[in-house]
Image (cartoon, rainbow, N blue to C red; front, top):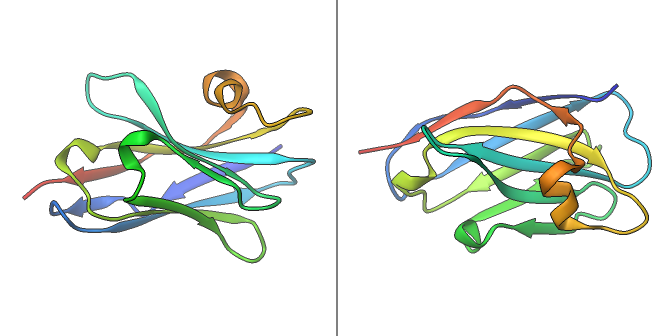
Length: 128
């Protein structure tokens, strides 16, 4: 069973940066994706990024492109979300999630229903 733990949230001023970490415990088999999602107060959960462990292929939601990046450590047991140029609208609880990929990388399927393991969230507050 894969377990995930997100950390690194906090309070930051607009324009600032934060780096979130998602520690992966347990064995991931095959092609495995780690996603970052966020949920702002009173809003639905949105996806932020999808990162494929095997080769580092990364997809970012349109509203964070150019500001956020995702990467992993050499052991591929921690995935990071580097967030730069933060805006007040980035305030949310951020979650990391993981799921195995089928025969091909269907991003929409992963976002909608493909994540089978979820970690507890970490709160990011962007405020002056």
